[in-house]
Image 1 (spheres, rainbow, N blue to C red):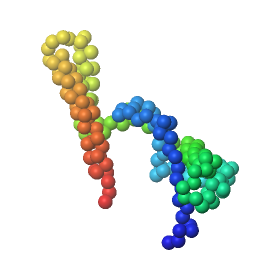
Image 2 (image 1 turned 30 degrees about the horizontal axis):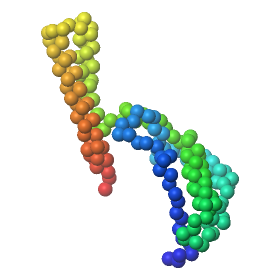
Image 3 (image 1 turned 180 degrees about the vertical axis):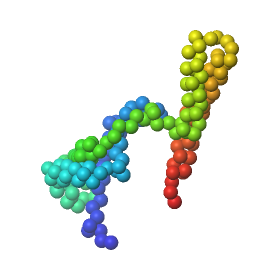
Image 4 (image 1 turned 45 degrees about the horizontal axis):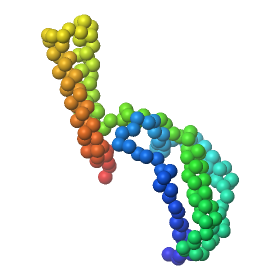
Length: 175
């Protein structure tokens, strides 16, 4: 392997402009599912990227600079701009492939631990409401217990979210 066909590139990452990530987010996230993209979608993506890449300015002088420890500000700015242009082109060209995923609805362990309890709790609540919201008796006790079981199951998957994600990944992993 020759060193002539490999150009080392260093970049500066401005940490002040990176987004803050919190533990929980209710934002809508856009994700690309490449497996579900049709051939027409992929052709459209390729066409858009080709068109946009043809308009990008290649920082030839900065890329041909032979100083590995180059401190010329103009070179750094041109390379950072080039990098940002590439990222923006890829994002803009793939927007038609994005599907909205509401991250607050995607709960690991829901199907395994909560779904049945939730369904039962909804039915118990429905019966309790239909009978005038009694404050004692069988329907009240059943509703109260089912609500408590649901809250417990929900708390369990919330506290063990990382473990449940890992288990789901391991289960779906094909070796």
